[in-house]
Length: 292
Image (cartoon, rainbow, N blue to C red; front, side, top):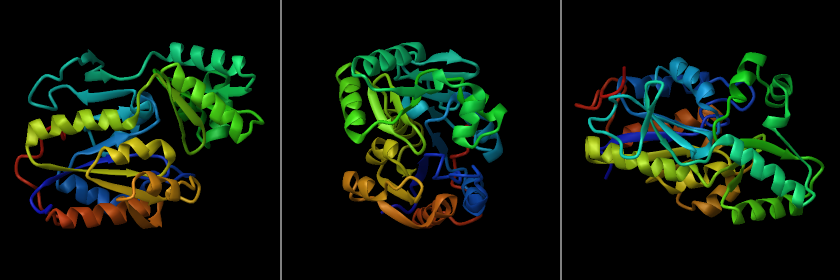
């Protein structure tokens, strides 16, 4: 029974809320308006950097906590929750809860491990801003934000085989690092994942608001832990990611959208809001905290 419960939306960005190619969320605009009107928390949970996510939050008018770099850190606006967050430290107006290891350590371990295995890799740290822009379909200013990494290194295996990737991923796991496949690049972090970050935020929302229902939306393999950490997992169809079948193997209870990308995101969110008894203009009492 979900009626009357506050939904908290944890969403991936690229290929999910944002179109894989244009990075537009226009197709989800009606659902986003409904989310804003109902003051439903919209938590962005992405492989993107803090510097990339901040302008997206502004465009979305969604000033809630967010998760950067595949779960490496949770950034909660100061005074968002009516309590202090344990183990968090203050930075740039946020209470920051870190799960990942510093970027320079991640890059160092990745390159040393790949060299030992004779696996040729190319990471963001090896690429110019212009090369990142071309590889990701970004403008040069956007690519410069993508390179402002604090925890997670996106990389590609150059002329490698699936066996090479498996060997490298296994070696990184043995070293205490988490490796996942994203939409355009593989990623390595210092043991963090989206699910750990989502679980922490879920506990904070329960402490603040009581009965909530957590919803996760994702499209690629690096969203598995996110989907496993919520009550209502949603796989947003995305042919570019090609991960729906594998995600369903890992999260068999997940819903799958008919439409792709942001249109599918809107389809799923509109349905869930209705199931929670939230109409287009209804504002649940006492849930506006942190919307400024």
